[in-house]
Structures are given as C-alpha cells and as structure tokens.
Length: 152
Image (cartoon, rainbow, N blue to C red; front, side, top):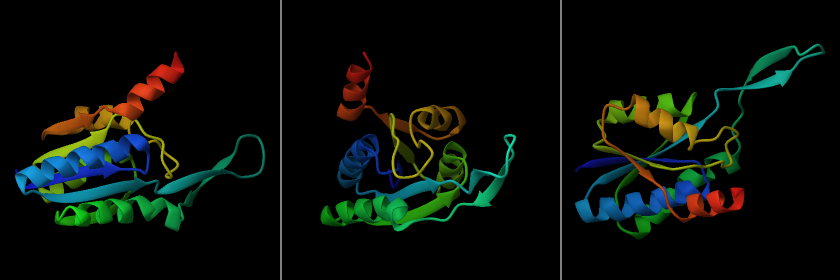
C-alpha cells in the first residue's frame, strides 16, 4: 500500500480515523493525503416567504485548522503527508479526489459533525462506501460508541 486518503472534519470520529490511518500508514510506509470538504455555498434567507439565495461559502481559519493539526500529527510520526481542502458534496469530493490521486485506501470515521457546517461522516461514510471503487475503511471507535450510548 503506497497511498492512503484520510477524510477529516475536526470531529472526534475523524480524529479516530486520523489515528488509525496514521498507524496503518506508518506500518506500511504509505504516503497520507488528508482531505477536508467545505461547503461550496451557503443557503441564506432572502426576504420573506421562504425565499433563499445561494452565497459562496467563505472559509474561516477554524474550518481549515483540522488539516494543519492532522499534518502535525503525521509529521510527529515521520509520515509524509499532503493536505487538500475541497469544496462541494463531501462524499462525492472524497471519492473523486481519491480517484485523482490513485489512493490505495480511503479512511473515514463513522460519524462526525465538525467545524464545517455539513456533517462529514455518518451519511457521508455511507455515501463514500456506496460510490467508491476502491477500498474504504470506516473507523468506528470510542466516539461512535459514546454517541450511541448517549442516544439510548
């Protein structure tokens, strides 16, 4: 295995995907690409009667911070990395970018609601599993179990 794409969003589940993906990359000597998907547009109310308008999404430093944090974690382990900020539908963008770089594996967390307004994982992990034509590893760790327990 030469290349692993790890999808992140700043959530605890994404952190578990980072930890697992980096452990796997270290053992395999693989290159890691971290991707974070931001919305391309925000839908804002315009006037009354339920009228909305799409407005280009303006990124904040807080939204891209998970990419920097992930890169630092990889560097601490001596793993070569690249980060990429994508815009659009998370599942579509993750799968398409994995195809572009020829990733050997896509790693995603099982559920996440991070700094980016849209949820990256959960419905997105299912979307990635459905669309991808390459191996996908969904990391379901402590954060997912705690969330399930809280929902009961």
